[in-house]
Image (cartoon, rainbow, N blue to C red):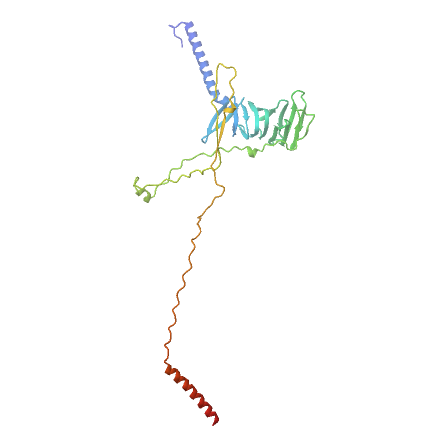
Length: 351
């Protein structure tokens, strides 16, 4: 379609301007669409631990009310103490036993771990392809068939490096000389000073159990509403006049030991003096307060001597009543009677 009233030069300029705007708009939309993919592609995994510090590229996600730290390519991680666990994005885990320090770098499906100190235990199925770098060695697991890759790499307290192959083999390569060896499955080796020539048996000197590195988040506090009051409790109005006595406060026990007080003279600071005057120790006074206690402590009641009691006075005896005297006549009669009685007794024996 042609417009005879528009010049051909202006028509070409309008077409070029429209094409340029179309290309710029397409590029801008492509950039916006590619940004989320880039963030997902360089995501290494979620790390959990009680005492970890992460610097460099990272982001924090909220999962079930808890903050989770997501490592990205270029993150630097320090495990100050305890253990940590890194769940990889493609699957698999890396257990870290601290104190440890390492950094991660991810390009596509290749994951590089630069281990400076500590011990790591990685376990992956097929992806990602893990390569571990130490100051002198390059360590790369080798899968047997389509089997998983499970190995441990770390440093003990003396600085010797431990390498243990649980499932699959592990290739060790010296970065300076290019010398390399393969540690077979179920083998444990120990390297001194990063030299492959002095290879020896490890003897389980390094350990990092994945079961112990599982991070358990702190329990989430739930607010439970108070239980509904019963009818009896609700029937009683508030402020009914009942006074509730407070609980008695336990008084601290009085200490019987001595009390020391130290009196120090005030310190003097002179801004103009180069050397500040020292404290005169002769002016320091120490006071010791004690409570004098008696040597003997009596408990109970002390009573004095009882007063001497006088002997009871004897009871006066009543004199016996005197028998009345018989008359003399009666005495004489009785004597005569006795003589008569005696004579009669003699007379009776003679007859």
